[in-house]
Image (tube, rainbow, N blue to C red; front, side, top):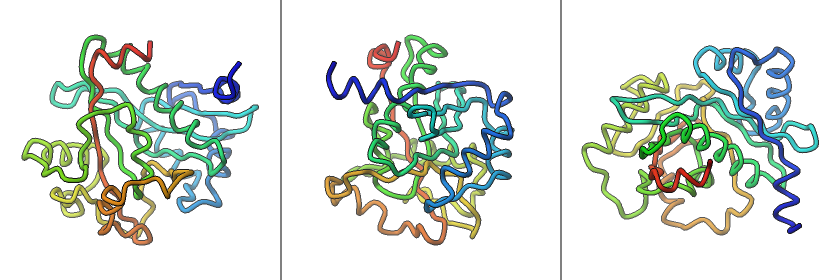
Length: 230
C-alpha cells in the first residue's frame, strides 16, 4: 500500500444529521479548536446544530481532527453545498483532513443532485481556505477575474444564507466586515503557505483577520466531475 493510501485509511470521516450531535461531541469540537485563531465556544457550536443540517467529522485513530457543518439545498433552483462553521486541527495531516471532509460533502451532493452541476460556497479568512476548492472550477473571487453582476449576486445570496447583514457585506470585494464577534467560517491554514500564489494572497489584502473579516467564495463542480465521488 502506498503512503498516501495509509494516510487516507488513518482518517475516518463520518457525516450525520446535526440533530444527532451530543453535548460531549460539542465539547470535543470546542477543545480541538481552543488553541487556534478561531476558538469556537460550545454555545456557538450548539447554535450551529440548529442552523445546519449535516455535520461531518474527521478522526485520526479516534481523535477528532476536523469537523464541518453543512447543508445541501437549492438556492433559486440551483443545487448547492453550503459549508458553514468548520475547523481543521493544525496537524501535519490537515490538508488530508480538509480534502476528505470536502469529499464527504461532494459525495452527499452527488446523492442529492445526480446529473446536475453543483455550486459550493463558504467563507474563510486566508488564502489557504481555497484548498477546499481544489475540485471546483469557475471559482469566485479569483485573480485577474472581474466578477459579473450575476457572480456578485451569488455572493449576496450566500451572505444572506450565512445570516450576514447587507450592511456588512461588500459585494465587489466579496468581503464580510467583522462585527467584533466570532465569525462562523471555515477555520483552516495550509501546511504550505509558501506555495500560495501571491495574486491569490493579494485577494485578502483588505481582509482584517483580527477584526473578524472574512471572504465569501464559491465555485462549481460539474456533473461529470461529481461522479468521481460516488
